[in-house]
Length: 248
Image (tube, rainbow, N blue to C red; front, top):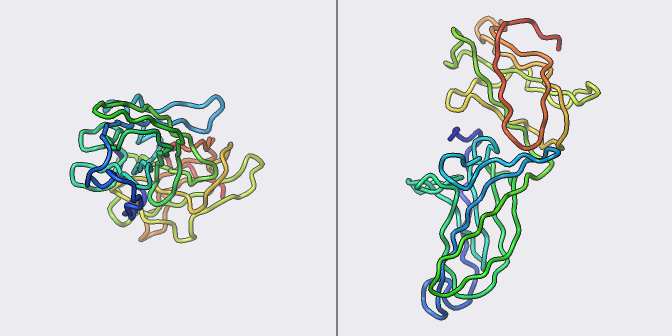
């Protein structure tokens, strides 16, 4: 999986329910439900990312860092092998095993990018005592949301603390929507990516420029200019070359 572009929030997991059996103290025969998830973007027609298995999780494409299942007054976070919030479980599968007393429950599955809710599914589940059920849920992209932008640098350009990234985004009529600070943002060697500062509605945008700047001399060492940017809730990947000299 790609590293998160923003630090994942540690969600407060408050066990709010007082119904018998929810906390394991007894009261009601218990059954298991395994909740699996994948992702539907905001395109027309929508793209589906992930097949509910470990090989194609869809998490990287959707740029989802963590997933939480909300049911019976409790939050159940997906965590990795180290107990950290994650889009997949410790076994690498986008799924979560939940034990509940027999009954019917409304529930939701939420996908987060850092602290931002970007995908969601609402449904209901039936739990049968002594059995293990399965829910295959497709989380739908929420508009507006941030745009995750990843960049590949050409040979000879290294993300070593001396390179800044500058960008600008325009709408389809070439009105400026967002731009990086004048000083740029530090190239991130852990992700080679960034998030827009704003949550933007889904639609067609133009990446006016995406530049790598050598900070000591303020020289542009690589760029991509006037590239189509279709914002539908999935990661956008760009390969910088050049430099060609973008017109800002």
